[in-house]
Length: 119
Image 1: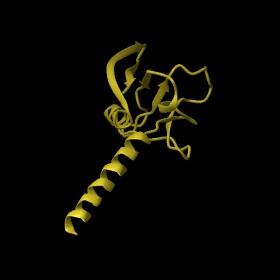
Image 2 (image 1 turned 135 degrees about the vertical axis):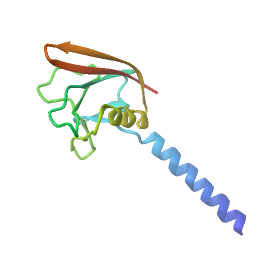
Image 3 (image 1 turned 120 degrees about the vertical axis):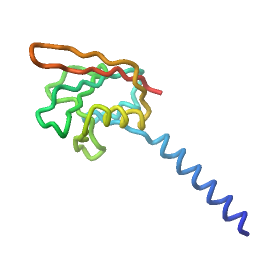
Image 4 (image 1 turned 90 degrees about the vertical axis):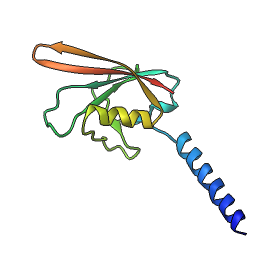
């Protein structure tokens, strides 16, 4: 009986893990970009006004919009990131890998752009 319970618990654990892998979602405004037929996206990170939080904007090839292209939760709340590494780890945990980074200097402002590829 003990082996059956153990085997059942292991099977349940594996099924719940595989379900969480396949339910990965990254919402940019109201669009789950993991469900789109795209391979790349770009994270844009400007100099933060608040040194404890950074804003991340996502370009996945969408049409221009006046709305900021924020990473959001399914209930439409902007995800707050502590640092660019926090955002990269978030993307990695949700099915995206880092490819390269570019820093763009415009006057006194530096914008960092991270190219990501869907796993």
